[in-house]
Image (cartoon, rainbow, N blue to C red; front, top):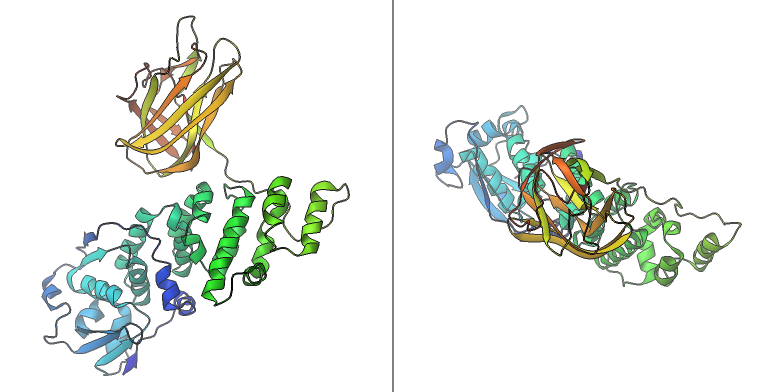
Length: 459
């Protein structure tokens, strides 16, 4: 019997992960309907009838780890045409004539998806199997299937699975997917690090995330997420979850948390009482916060820069009149679409045209009538024509080529500034915004004029 091992660097890394660990890391992918893709590049699909068929089969694969194997019949010629790895295996200079091949490192479901593509040019992907299928496509060098898997993962990418997919994109050497993961993790760092998926990543990926300068997050939340990861890692290693064991599994990664960049209150109420730091470290950090002569610390002391929010301004001028524009608790609303994925963080709003005033404001983001985010807060206007940012609790992922609706309802000083000479299309850096009127608007706001002058976003 022949063991089919042709190990690239990502496969050697994969072998270091237990089967359970690898499968657990796929559970954070959102459940979605099966994706069925019809591929045409191989021409005829007459071989489809022979898929997983014993008739004329000249090779059998025993796929999966011991105790969970599945025997799959196949035809050497079909596989050799679709994969250079199988071509070398069956017809190369070192080809052997074995009729049974053991493949313990590939999941049976993923192997069947691989073979179905080779026989019929069709791809069926699901959240539960897409990572294992990508592994199989990489192992046997089937680029079209690998590309379909990466596209599926990019479509499924969101804060709760971004850290897991970052780990896998590095494992599979997929730089474009890695970059997409970073975009989500940076913009929605708090949601990403508080997710269950964050606790499933490997230590090298944890260290890379903790080194990230552009994480949009408070450091106390980073520390809490690190403790959660350490507790999960203790469980994986069969250790009792104690502060000492958490520190042990973290190793040097603990010193990537920028503890001195927290507030004194956050440190005192959180880190100092976690018992993860030594007494000397706790003492020194307290001195760093309070003493004139600050001790040297092993923790980075500089706050993360985070992301700089961008602003899309849709009006060319602003104005005010003695009888216009009035906030009366009515809804101002506008629709927008973008040509690439962004993260809406909040809105820039006009304030009072009659001096300083405080406003109560409700902002909302919807897609096809479904509320994606809302916030009820207050802001203070200084009487100028400047815009004043109002934020959602977390940045919201907005997909390309789809119209979204942003709305605001303000209570406060009635007379306000308003925008004029509105634009239907605005280029803001690498992003093109398109605007259209919203039927939700009951206070006169539209494309040409009114309120909601700015969208605040990350890209």
